[in-house]
Amino acid sequence: SLFLGDFNASQALLNPLAATEFGQPYVGLPDRLTGYYTYTAGAEYQNREGVVQPGVKDKCAIYAVLFNGSERLNATNVMTSDRVIARAELADGSDKATFTRFDVPFVYRQGVPISDKVMVAIVASSSADGNEYRGAIGSRLVVDSLRVIPRL
Image (cartoon, rainbow, N blue to C red; front, side, top):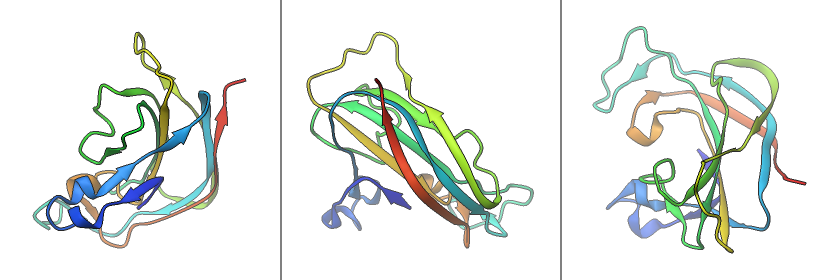
């Protein structure tokens, strides 16, 4: 996994999902998340208990989240917090043998006020369900030239 933010090592063994503290201050409002990626899913998708799930294929996740405030979110709440203003998410996390360009818009939630201080988090994971301890060992995601394009 690759993410924009901090890693709180004091939480790594106690509460691993809280150890990833997502976000950096952002000025303005973003319009799009762009970049390139290659992806190869590992051979055997496993559930949380490590049991192979026949017929299930791993996929990658690349997304950015804009949220209110100056306190970081973590893996327990980055997708569900009421502080989230907008998201930009790669729809297709399937295998890509060569570098593939993506350009995904930030989709703003209706009726969510925007505060003076906002943060943006970018997350790239070789297993989209990795935060739930599900995925394929050996999945490989390579990203390049990630950019947050501001609104004009």
